[in-house]
Image 1 (spheres, rainbow, N blue to C red):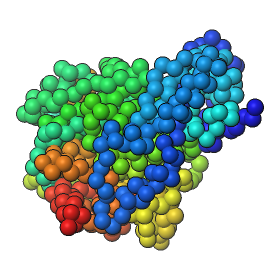
Image 2 (image 1 turned 135 degrees about the horizontal axis):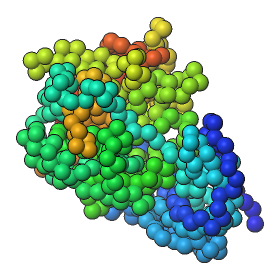
Image 3 (image 1 turned 90 degrees about the vertical axis):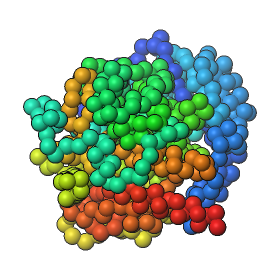
Length: 532
């Protein structure tokens, strides 16, 4: 029987990591197997091309119809089940819509089944299960399986939030921070409260305390939004009690989006911080027929160089699914400037924000007086190291909506986009002009591009709610937004390291921060044009 390398599955040890020997052969684990779309990618390609068409995106598909047409082929699922039985593995979950079959077994069984050698690996004082090299497939799965996730359980992503130094956390002492509703007002968000919409929020650790949410929204004189936790891959709403830990991300996301669209329902998908957990959380949210989120907010990520090609391809396919179903995915572009925190002297962008089907959200430093913006520049706090993530993808090609664009360089001149440019849009992210939130009983000010993704998600929930009477969802809005410069406050001052702000799109703040009313008008005009 021939054995085939699973394309893009190659893993290397993290820099500075060392193997501690073989993983315990009796250790039990669960692994997610991702299958191809029914009919193959060619059957889906015309729908993807239509998303970029001049007439605006096509009518979104219903989740059930999408699963029927583009989910996994039942025959492929049966092939995985037969493979599992042959190798002593147990099928614990199958989702044709998500094209995912979850298998359980021991390290020894998975080593044999997928031709890997799982090790215990130490990195930065922590240990994880890891592998090097590729995953291997037998003949009966070759061409059917597009990804295998969970063999390696290293921490995959980081949250993109930044808090003020602990000596200055009480918002009563900070005159240049804002509540989320004040930011929405400064950005001229259209009236609305998100009624009838669900916002999905992806979290890879930490949790929220209902009592903190009650106190926070009461202080803003806003009704407490409906918030529910969804467990993915055994992830849980688990507050750590540390306001500087992952709880800060969870509470920031809920409180910013919740303040902007308080009548929406917020479904928070908790998953382990691995490539498996992250992907499963994303696909669960996209294909969730119970909560039906129309917009998803993601504030976690890592440099493209830290991901396997199979992971980036799988996420990108999931975001294409979302686009076809009219779901907008807002993703923070990162907080480490043009290097994305990689110390190799080169430019990097953050994934999954770099997917062409994400609305990548960069950061600004916002100042206001008397209810009006007085200045807005690229967020770049050289002293503390925070800066808007942005640049040019080394993995994804330039999408059609960015054709002809170039990135202004800090040293002068421009670089033509050959890859996907990041970000698309921006908003206030500077911790010194950040958001007043409550985390683990502490009132604090938090910034980072983590705040921008839920801010845009709240705006989109408002717009979707206003359009609910005719069933129109904003969906994949990137092509329309790029054609409507008036929908943005153009940011022309500052840099994020190697890239500089410039008129129009730039690799620091994208098209700029939102003029919410104009964003709504631009999308309405495109919808009307399509109807005519």
